[in-house]
Length: 251
Image (cartoon, rainbow, N blue to C red; front, side, top):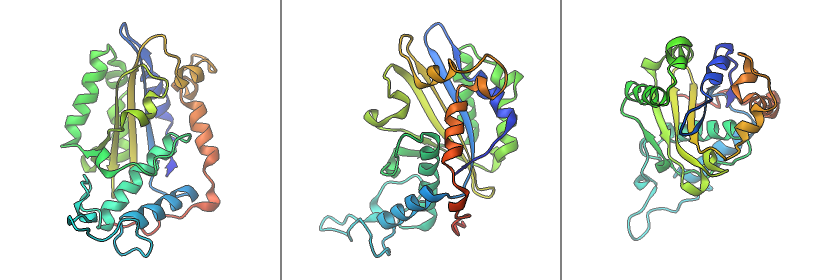
């Protein structure tokens, strides 16, 4: 997955990091193109070997005595023996790997994702979270959803959420996370994903986001987003020599 630079998002990300009387809120919006790099190719091969029943190195056995097969795997993407379902899983896991380069999400299970009923419901839920924590600026003044819509065309997108197990949640590595969400706005035609994550952290807990914020001045550019260091590191990890185009991933 390739991170997409979008200048207007830097100021928005800065506004998604703020303090409330109850907690410190850290959030970010990251756009990605579904273009595969070296690590993505390995991930794609791994998932194909695991879920494609026709793969020569398939990791899941044929139906056992209880009738279990790949078709029985619960998936918000559809049956996992279908290529389109596996590709969607690949895109979402690849996005997580790109957003959290110190983690490996290769073995995340399909049932840890959920397809949301509608874009509007998710938009309303995120807005309610922001408004309830006293932050209307990102939505009303900075045009959060207008910026996202320009990048991905919300009306033509699906939304998935990621619900990690408590012991493997990258949003709670330091502990003290009171609430969090992870949404993926996915436009198949444009082959783009917007990853939108946010969490509320108890005061007294030092997070990686806080440490990165201490290294930057208080301006309205990328440095104020609190994620500049993370973003630069990810860009350095991306090797154009390993770009595999779209890996023939057509729907």
